[in-house]
Image (tube, rainbow, N blue to C red; front, side):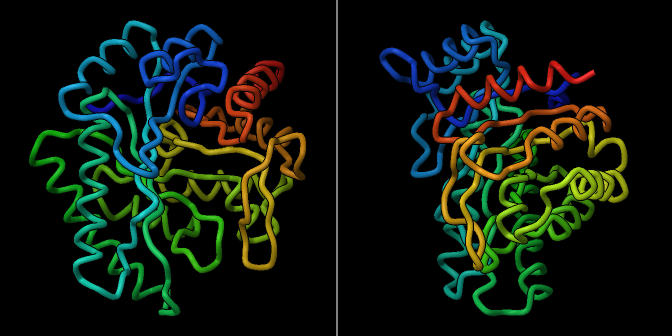
Length: 280
């Protein structure tokens, strides 16, 4: 039975910077010490926890009352031209999800594909077919974890909110990872109170209250250009309208995890939690 958070939790993308003797175990302990709720295991370069170590991570997270999520590898493209690259991408998703599950993680996110100058509809079908296969294999092996394609920040990448929500409607155990900074960078819009309201209303329309009660969110400052995302920034060094976004979170009474992806890691995660707590 997959975890469903009872409130909106805030955490760090990876080990907090101020962690002494940095390790996953010490990072989890530091997250708890800081008063945060969650930590995202960063498997973006490689899955750096093995099967034997995972139960120890799970035990520490449970002891410290820290919810774990996971970000899968960057080297995934379910629309690659070569069949072997698609198979390798599926295997990477499954491996990251498996290890994350064994660590006790609630949710695993990843960037699904690139359009490769193809029609978005045909790319969608390829991604859907691959994800159906991946989620079935994970379920058959008892790895009960939410698999979450993420909204992406570059226009060349598959991952509009509409695409991710459609996958979530059509495939069991798939839910969105919504990166609001990516949505802003991708469109150079989606950064006002009304637009945030529209985005969450769309989630509710497509996934019902269940979608709002089971959210995996990324948020940071963002630098962008005509083609979309360039790099992440600290929130208060960017134009990201986090204040209105947090207000909309509160109004919709969403539940789940907000992972701060700013370069200053725990500073912005703590700031977001504090600011959210101030909203009546």
